[in-house]
Image (cartoon, rainbow, N blue to C red; front, side, top):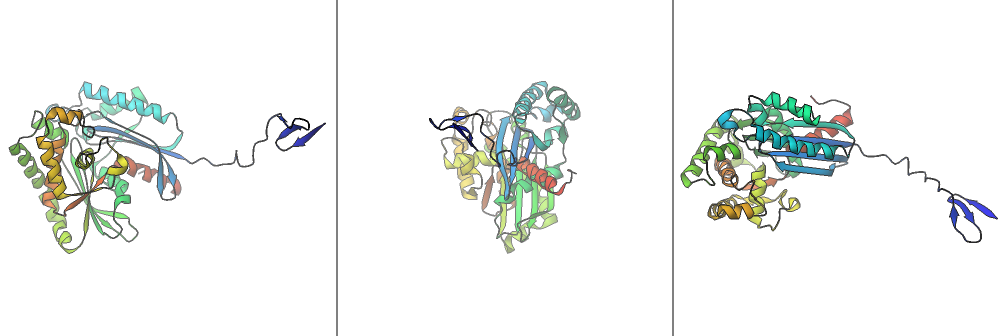
Length: 355
């Protein structure tokens, strides 16, 4: 004789189950978290972020980052080279493969300085669409700054009311001056973009390093770009009267931070949010100057793709620190793509589209 059970048919003698189990009540009704995706295509890197929302922000499902040097040679030729375009499209195809694993409800894929500046930037975007299916959007530097600051908000000290956030890219550097309200929301007062990045500086001073004179020339050039911004917003006066947090979001900053810590391999969990004093920055720069080029290429936190970019990045960073002697930098291994995802989540919650 058999007895019916909610778990199927059960034989009284052997106690074994026969037939299919009924699905539990919650198994099919469990809601799936929506997925959001962002691509940040810069002069140096191609970065992808796929995430789902949480009560405090988002949880990362998958990330991808590859150095493509899309802006290589742009300063001299004014166009994106075929070699750089092929490298970049290859990286974007890898992004597509990763995106295909998820059904993102909202996405945004942006391109920044290299595409803004290149004569063939629009042609490149059209080619990306043909070869990968991705809709790239060339954004303004103002939008780039807004998204970058949004991505860095979790690192802002809740007791601080002002923040200087900057991104040393491959073809340019963006600076944002923001006020922070009691709810830890950033309100951008001013933004600046100037045409010095690690690739443009490296190509201007060809070779595998910067001489002391060339290094100082870069620092002075940075200061000349920053001076009008300082005069307009009076940031030095604010620094004298209250605490200001300086946040650096770039491969330059994360590389210097990891190099200073002497990490055996790059570790985002350790670097993201770390504090680097100006004194430690100078020490790291001096160590980099003395390090033979071959050792930079073999260093686990620098590697062959950044070996020629480390000192140009230091020079730009030093210029910013000399203009605003706050004394400490917060290193951010986050920025534009995180800001995009936060935007997409907010838009989804409010039922609005991106502007």
